[in-house]
Length: 217
Image 1: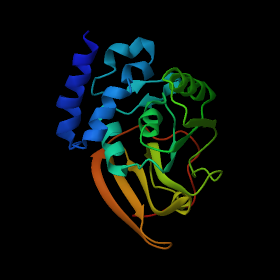
Image 2: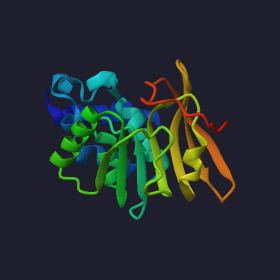
Image 3: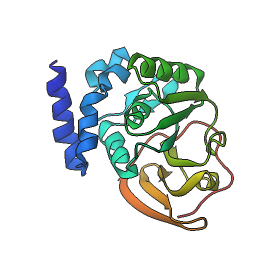
């Protein structure tokens, strides 16, 4: 397999047609090597339009979802990002190239170790991988400029909203299979939030206990 040709095809045939037109995002997909974040057994699927299996029944988002979320949250170089669900570490690595710092919270010790290993091997120094249940957010370094929830939720807990700075954005995939929506919520003031629906999809639910306090769109 010609890896660079496969990467080019992924960008031009899957990602760009999915309304990912931000050149910075498209360029970043050349910089962060997706094949280095995919389990070896699935390396030949690194650029395919599929969810790639990870240990413990987890999966990576398909490439167009990763790229579209990255475009929609529009991370700036001074911003601190929280990701819930580290997976292979690929999404955190992408965001790290745009952000000041990324904290990614992973409930599975095995996957936490995998993400840390992949991020370290890629030479990325501004990501902290922590083990824990982030289904209600992560108080430790709150408030954040950007929060990305890398897994589905029936509803997004209100605690996430409280952990967001004014001007900050949350990307979350909410609903029930097979009809789920990716929404971006922007905190426009201390008390007000704007929500837009970006695309419809169907992804695996986030691991961890369901949250009690819910935010209804």
